[in-house]
Image 1: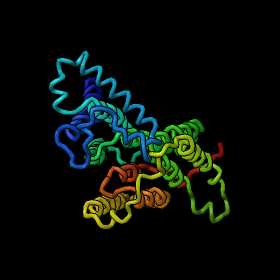
Image 2: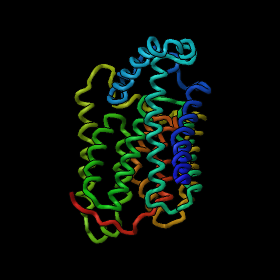
Image 3: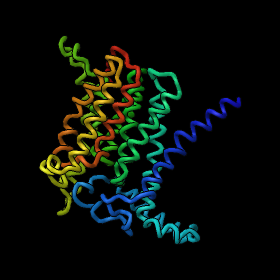
Image 4: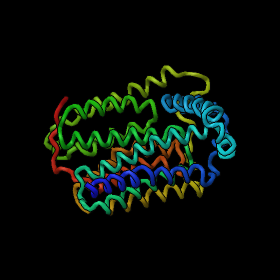
Length: 336
């Protein structure tokens, strides 16, 4: 009984308390030269223009969290007002609380997936990998946004549902994945990567060679679940300020030392994750995942900035999960 209690306490400290402390250090321990959100008194107007306007759920939560922090600072937490005012604005504190909540959920999900059908039973090995994953998320917070942590949680939830569906073949997990993709498209375009991961897990070259296209029928609902809300948002949210993309930065990506450093960072990390895959099946799944993620990578190249390494986080974390997951050699695909 004492050992079980110790394990629960250790798990709580490692999965929740330690990541939260690291997250707080990144938001309040040092200031990034990349963003000035810390001085914004209210939700910035740019979040409701350009491509940011389509990230409906994070924008709504940002407004609500800012109002909550205004109330707390001038009400129940008024005795703490001087300290909070010196270290940020109601918007920034609300951003931290919102992102911290979803960051902790990400940590819990990563912990669950590293335990589910894992290749390694040693708890110390899993904790080292978990800590590495947490550090990757924290280090990317030098460019904090109101949508990336929520989007990462939604994406990891989709990865977890895909793995559960792979090993159980229960249609409920597949249906939940469809619903999740619809919802997460209102968060950020990262939702499309759930399709890439599902395809990487279930696509079988042998089936194509044998002209068995059953895989196509099971992937179509996922594509539709992404495209309908994605295009719908761009159809109904139309103002002079909204655009499909914020700009095209391909020239800056290959001319700026910072952006080149971000690209090199992502390539090196993904390369070493690939080398960590000691099982042939896992390497094959990781390779398929990168292939199906090419549209996302192309869009990052065209309209994103490589220096914002947070854009590569879903790929990095997925690679880590793939590396230590025990995949079946074959997966029977059922139509739903």
